[in-house]
Length: 252
Length: 311
Image (cartoon, rainbow over all chains, first blue to last red):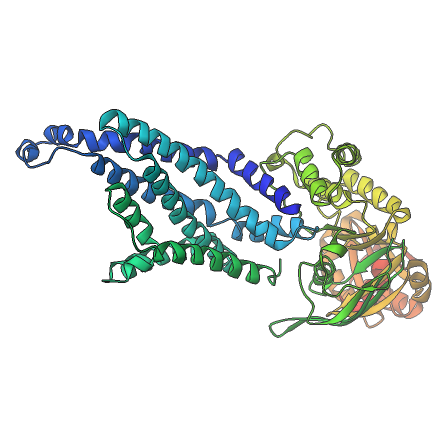
C-alpha cells in the first residue's frame, strides 16, 4: 500500500529533521516541570522582590493546580509546534517541486496527504503520551495519586485538540502558496475559535470544550456534554477531506 | 514500449494559450526531440503527460489506451524528469531511489538490485550514502534521471535533461538516452539543439502551443536542406563582431545569425543572394574575414527558420 510507504517516509523525515525530537523534548519538559512549578509557586513568590506580602494569600497548591498547569503548558506549546510543523508540509513540497517528483509516480494524492497528517499525529501522540507519563509520575510524587483513567482521557483530549489544529493547518497549507500565509490563517482560526468559545453557551460546542471537559474530569465532575468532541472530530474530517478534494485538482 | 498520440490538446493559463490544439504522434521505441522557443508549451505538454497538470480539452493515447485523465495505472508505466528535479535533502540517493522503488511496488530484492544498477549507471555510487542536500546541480540531474528509470518505464519524459550538466556529464547522459530507445519510448524537450540532433531520431517543433512540424530527423534535414553560410573572422575584428551581427541580421536574404567564437553561422533564404549581400556589407564597412563557406544546415538553422526565432 502506498499510504504505508508515504507514511514511513514522512515519519522518517520527522525524525531526521528533528521535528520529532523537538516535540518530544518540549512536551516532556513541560510535562515534568508543570507539577513542579505548581508545587513551587509559593516558594518562587518569596524569591520575587516584594513577593513575601503575597505568600499568605496564595493557597496551598493542589493536584488541580498541577493538572491545570500541565494542560495549559501542553496545549500552548503543543498547538504552537503543531502549527509550525504543519504549515509548510504541502506548500514547501509544491514550491520546491518535490511533490511533483513523487506525484508523477503511482502515489495517490490522498495517500500523500493522509501520510502527512498521520505521521504528525503519531509524533504528537508519542510526545503527549511520554509527557503524560512524566507529569503523572511527578504529580504522584509531589501531590499524591490521580485517577489514572481520567488522566488517560485528559491526554487523549489534548491530543485530539492538537490534531484539530494540525488538520486545519494542513488544509491551509494545501490551499495557499506560502507557509507563512498558512500559519497566519491557522493563528487567525485559533483566535477566532477562542473568541467564539468565550461567547456564553457557545464554547461547549467547540474544540476548546475538549480542554474544559478534561479539567472537569480531573476535578472529579461528570462531563455531560460531549458536543465539542464530535465537532472536533468533524473539523478534522472536513479539513482533511477538503484538503484532499482541492489537492487532487491542483496543478504541480 | 508505448506509442504516444496527442490529439488537439488545449490548455489555457488565464488569457494565455499554453497549448492551442497540439497534435503529436510519437512512435513506439523512438527518441522524440521536442523543440520550441521558451514558452512554446513543451513543459506544459510534458506535465500533462506526467499527470501533474490537466488539459482543458484534447486526448492523449498511450498505445491504444486513452489516458487523458491520467491515473495511477498510467503512471506506473511512466518515467518523468522535470527541468529542475527536486529531492528531499535529508535523504541519501540510495534512500530516495529505494523510496521510489517502493512507490512502484518493486519487491525488496529487485528494488535493491535496481537501486545498485541505477547508482552505478548515474555515477552516484560513491555518493550513495551522502545527503542529497549537498549535491551539485549535475549530481541532482543524474539522480533525477536515475529515479525516472527506476520502474523500467515504457515511456520516459525528460524535460531539459542535460541543461545542468557539464560537457562530460552531458555526453554520458546523452549516450544513456541514446541507448534507451531499445527499452522505451523517450520524449525529450531541450533547447540545446545540438543535443537533440545527436540523440533523437524524430523531431517535433512547437511554437505558441501548436505543432509546426514533426518528422524523422533526417527527413527534416533533407526537407529544409537550404545550405547555410559560415564566416570565420580574424582575431582583430572581435570588436566589430557585435555591430556586424546586428547588420547581418537585417540583410534580406538571411533568416538567422548565431555567433560562436570568431565564427558567424548564417541561416539563409538563398545562398547566392546572401553571399552577395554579406560581401557587399563587409566591403562597405571595411570588415575583413578569413573564410566564407557554404555549409549544410543544422537542426538549429531549421528550428530558427520554422519558429522565426530571429526574423
